[in-house]
Amino acid sequence: MTDKALGKFLRARREATAPSEAGPSLGPRRTPGLRRSELAVLAGISVEYLTRLERGSDRRPSGQVLGSLADALHLSPEERVHLHRLVKLSDGAMCPQATAPVRSLRPTLRALLDRLEPGSAFIADSQSGILGHTEGFRQLAMPIGVLDTDSPNLARFVFTDARAHTTFPEWDRVADEQAAALRAAADLGDQMSAALADELSVTAGAEFSRRFASAATLPPSTGIQRWTHPIAGEIRLAYESLAIPGPDDHRLVVHLAADAATSEALEALHTGRLIPARTG
Image 1 (spheres, rainbow, N blue to C red):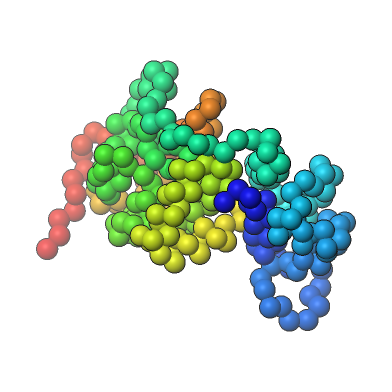
Image 2 (image 1 turned 90 degrees about the horizontal axis):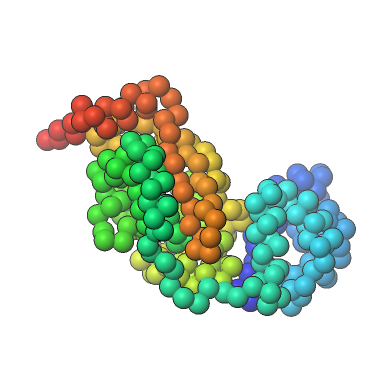
C-alpha cells in the first residue's frame, strides 16, 4: 500500500483537477482531469519525470518539485502536509504503523468529553472507530444505529448499514469523505486502516472500492451535515474535526446546531420532549 502511495495520490489529484486549470482544451479527452503533459507544464517539470513519480519509480522529489506540484494541483495546507508525509514514508523516514491502535482514552480526554456535555461530541481513531462520546452524541447516534455494536465504526456504518442512506440525505458525499479518510491513513502505513479498507472492499463492494481507489483529497475538517433523524427530524449539524496531540492519530469531532430549527430540535431531544414518529 505504501510503496506507490505518493504516485497514486498525485495521479488521483491530477485526474480530479479541472482541465480548465491548464487553459483552453486541445481536443477530446479520454480521461478526466488534467493530462500528464498539462500538469507537467503547470509544475515546470518534464512529462517523463511526472510519469516516474506517478508510477512510483522515483520516490524522492525535491522540495521545490513538491511545492510546484502542490501549487499546480491547488492543494490545501493539510493536503500539502499529507504530501510531505507520503514522501517521507516512501523514503523510509517514517515507519508504518505495525501495532493495533489504542482503543482506550487517557483520563484527560474522558474529562474533556464530560466538559462538552450536553453537546454532541466524540473521539475517533484513524479508522473512524468511535472510542468515546458524550451523552449528547449518544442521544443522536443511538436511534440511527451507529452505536449498535460493541466497537462502533462510522465508516463501517456508512457503507454497510442501510440506515445510513436514510440518515444522510447527502450519502454520496459522506461516503466519499469516509473513503478518503481511510485512504489517507492507509497510504501513510496505517495497517488497521488498510485492513478495514480490504474488509469494506468485500462487504460494501464497488460502492466503497471505487471511492477508495479514486480518493484525491483529504476529508474536510469542518462543514455541515444534513441528517434525517428518526426522532429529531430534519437537522443540520455543523461539525469541527480537531486533531488530538499524541501518537495515536485520534480526532475530536464536535457537532453544533447549524440553524435555529436544529437548535430547537436538539434541545427537545436532550430534554426528552421529542418522541419517535409512529409508523403503520
